[in-house]
Amino acid sequence: MKRGNCKRRYSGGVLLLALLSGCAGVQEAGDTRPVNLSGFSASFQQGYTEGCDSAGTRSQRRNEGRYRTEADYMRGWNDGFSACQRRR
Image 1 (cartoon, one colour):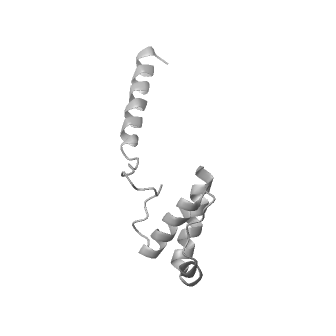
Image 2: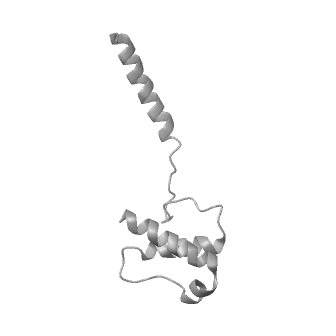
């Protein structure tokens, strides 16, 4: 491989990385959720947030009444707890 081709590939790779990093999600201040939940119901979102907040702590933050009666809240809480527990 010629020396000029190597430099061109390297600069192309750097450019590609710069472009892809612009696609990375930016987390807003105060948003503790590590994922975009905009397509989910409000009940799922609240459950996910509370499940995530509970992961890795001794105090569980969960509305037991909603957990037993609302399937979306329960699924969100379980998903949030699992996802955030793996990150901590």
